[in-house]
Image (cartoon, rainbow, N blue to C red; front, side, top):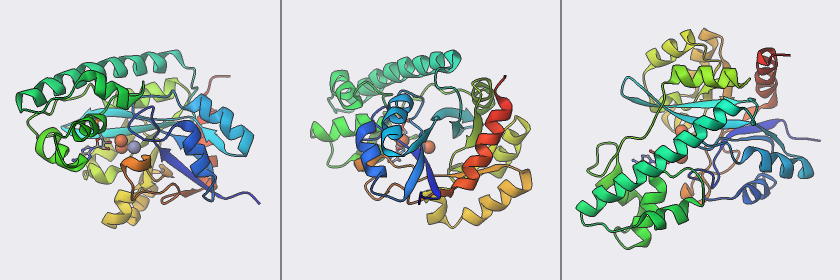
Length: 279
Ligand code: AMP
Ligand code: FE
Ligand code: FE
Ligand code: ZN
């Protein structure tokens, strides 16, 4: 009998996860999860290869992405699901995001240098393995070069949002991200609203067509906020989503399926997406 649970928030080497698509699928097979979404930051390169592999082993892979947005000083992560992975406009956005992340990495490296920390863009790009470059890759490069004793120390000393080597990343507005996902035939879900901590953001995005809320997320479990976001989703008639936000070895305490949703929620999402695709 097939599993009744889905994990819709997973990262691979196409952004700041440590697992390849192949390694991720292998790991999924050790759990009770049979429907997944790979939601790399600003990158959709993992979807089609994962789908091809998943088909062979009985794992359904739905299209996913986690877009970096900025709203009233908040980092807002907008998840897209069930969009067309070949959509041209979304592809162009991903190229822009990748280029901007590369430029930002160079700027961060310059700032680190001014603080006596020496790493090269080449080292960072090698760690990113062609995927979207993020601060986690930079932190790893600093540790590998002996510039800090831990990944967390690099963030705490240099690259936290208020750190001396911080550089803002290219972000779009969540309103634009919602519209982009809709045009690509998908549904738009606000990721881990607990990290924003301001429910007026949810209310605002609902007015701009937000379809769902990521209710089940490790951050909400730790903070005792699952019930709160469940109620909020009901109040606005939003779809309910959830996932582990797995990053492989980069966040070793998180396991695939640690946060999951019943497949009934996925089917509701699928229905909304179907109604959106022009026939
Ligand atoms: P970026 O998209 O390049 O700004 O990197 C964001 C990623 O860095 C997040 O998804 C987290 O995985 C990680 N991150 C951000 N802030 C911190 C922090 N204070 N400590 C550890 N990891 C962090
Ligand atoms: Fe991440
Ligand atoms: Fe996120
Ligand atoms: Zn994530």
